[in-house]
Length: 498
Image 1: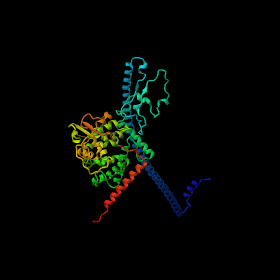
Image 2: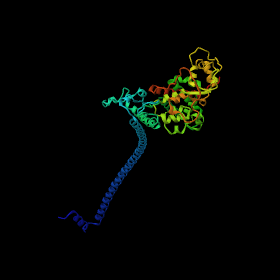
Image 3: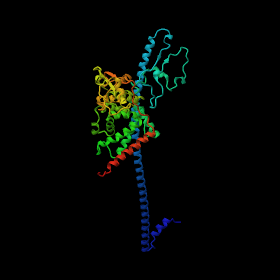
Image 4: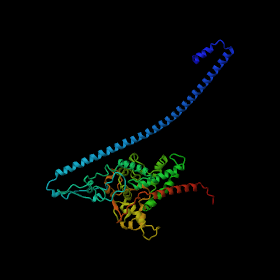
């Protein structure tokens, strides 16, 4: 039996087929081939289209992945740089602490070697911490109500049992063994700019995690200032203000004045009398420059408020910038940036502003010796609740020193005579301030007042604000929004001529 192919070959070679049949068969064959080729080309074209589409989608996904990887690499690199910097600071701090502990232990060993006599002769000998500072944990927060200067540690008896872990912590929650290393938490290396930077970084990170729009630091004063500056900057930038912009520089000072006035009125009512009497406008100019640094705002700064290289180099509490003595600001930045009592130090410094004068200028029959008098003492005397006419004028010199502080008229006359309302250029610091903080005394210059102190029986100290709370934050925000919007609306409204 023949196969189909052999049959076709037989039929093709069949001489009995006519020429017409052969032509028809040839045409049919061409048609079948053409249809097959068209179908093949159509399938190939569809396959190419599908492959092209897949390639494009794959390229698009890869480019997005590459971008995501690049962004992640940048973030990781930044994190690594931050970690490296933090490790460097921690290593330097640990090295400093180790060196200090070694020196202290060496001193203790020398004392032990030099001790002679029976143990009972030294049984009441103790170790105490002295100085104006106190122990503060590395994370900012309200310091515990514990006065290390009142703690004295007695030597243990020979048969005393080792203390348990619970006995190592006193009622205030701190370990009394800190007293064994005098000055271990002193201003020399535990309260400078590096611990402040580390603590502020941790505080800001915690605020972000907790969703707070403000930070708590060792300086509530600075927290208020920083929040007010941020709210002012956000509001003014939204209205088109910018450093070097087209808006007139003079229009910046009015919002700053209103915000600072609100701050002092809410948190420090006693200080408003101080500002009203002294006409101390330097803080307004300083804040305006900090918000919009430019040549114009810098030129309006009082020379004593121009920032020093130390201020520009190190992060520090903003309240330090409010002191009109560059040398004192540098000392505070270097030694007390992380001090939890920095606000108290600031208030002590401002309370200690004095003006020098010949004593005979103020007191009748006094010698020609130089004397100094505090600005706050005269302001307190001027605002004393004594029934009298504010227009009453007294003529210096006063009969005696006590009259300067008991008579508002004489206090007002002395205040004007000493130019206490003419700016920071006349002020110096009371030496009593440096007796309390000897590490802040400058090595040179005329910062410290000289002469005989003239003072009342009781001296008041200016107050500092309480820590921020959500109510205060909302009050600041609402006041700034309302006051600035109202000022812009009123100024843009045309007033008809009367």
